[in-house]
Image (cartoon, rainbow, N blue to C red; front, side, top):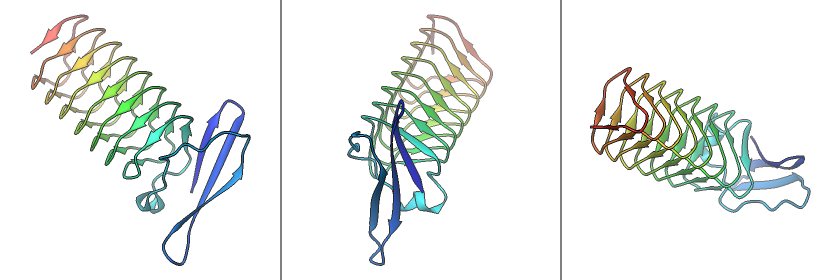
Length: 189
């Protein structure tokens, strides 16, 4: 298992091994005076097929109980809280904040400044442009697109193949049917 913490041409490559006592040894193989970010931890679940070829940016904080799927890229300054699971092939840009016990499906793209709170479920192949907020307990099905500054209220449910346009707001506990487009700046629910 390799985790790469990179910033431009500088890299740290960390190799982990399990000792006879069941402890994890971390060996730094290459460094250019880049600090290792506290909180980047290899979990037992990642040894069971998760976490291959994951890139973690500088200043990123990942809770030890969080997991990140294969071939995902987590950029600089991201926060991923406890119990959260990120699917494979995800791309999480700078400054994204993901709360506790949240599930992010495979192939999701979260641009800079996206905020996803606690207990949120996000299906596969979703795209969140900069500044999108998804509040506690919301559910987003598959293949939806959230434009810049859009907002999903607590407990809301967004169906598959939805388009939430720039600045649109989905109210608390609203249910957005499959294939709906929520217009620019409008309030749904």
